[in-house]
Image (cartoon, rainbow, N blue to C red; front, side, top):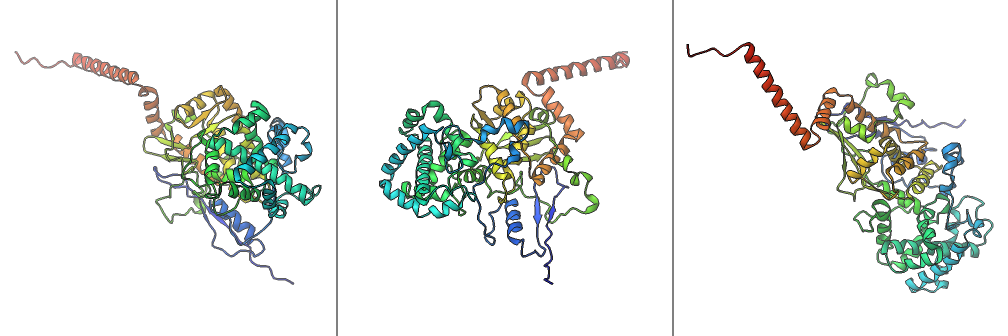
Length: 488
């Protein structure tokens, strides 16, 4: 009989007794023995939950997955089905059979291949040979059976054309050169407007090892760091600007969507939605202090107040000035007010599709992650309920959108489903916000600030009314009890 190693137990300690000025944080401890059969998977998942890079002890072959079928079910799943399918161009083998539908883009791929060849100073045959060196590794990136219809030569030609197409488009956007005219010439303005969404579809991904080979040939100095940096910042902030935040790290991503997701959430930052460390080190929660809510999934996953409702409770929005950290959401509870800090984001017609495909990536198996995108969108769905919420976000410079009306932004967040979130993050943030809102003292101060002192004329009216009330009181008092007559 084989012996069974003791199973590992992870304790997730959530610090509930926080001071008024502390941010939300999550602490995870793992100091017990582990089953050797599960050390790789569990250790990698826990490391990612902490916001660290995956461990190197456990190796497995990850694949470019297809969209989980469950995401396509239901009313919203049916409405969002088009967000997972290419509109202009097919990249990779999953939709390659539909290339007749994308015939114009297939012709344009040959143009971008020639242009990329001229930019690198390499012949097309030389580019073909460079990509062929990684063709076997690239084939392994797709799910089993999806590339069987292509021999090595056909598959390599597909990778070369699709890779050059993607990088040529990224360079046109990031460098803002005159070559972008070719996109409109061959695809039209409407096709060009939909290229961004197609590049970030989960089922339209090219293995990054192929893109890496082509980037090194085109940008030998920094391997394409600046061009990717500018393109991602264009998606995040609407500006083509190079920031200090590095896009390419030591760990090679599986594909471009995974790389952009990592840049979007900045996995190198603290796992907590509020990343400031707690000042009460060593404090632990005991069982007798645990509330019933901590074990109730429905209660922990419920929504909290919207932006306008939070403002009425004395919680004000602030746009972080250090966007290079890209740390997401923080909440601070002060003595007389609360502060919710968010990073500036751009919402465009392609944003919904990109968000949904990043969520689909997080829902796929064999992708240990902390569900940061799903959690972020779950928070935004709670904050944005009415158009006044969008108006407040715009006024604070947190949200910039090009959807026309604010109602369209509300509709976008409403149509995005978040099947699973990181409950440790979301529960901590929601609980601290509710704790602040339930304080009567802070609510009264918030009402004073938002109702009576929200503007100079309201403040002046309050002072005048207070003065009139005070003088009326004095007049009544001295009428009842007049001052003694000293002249007699």
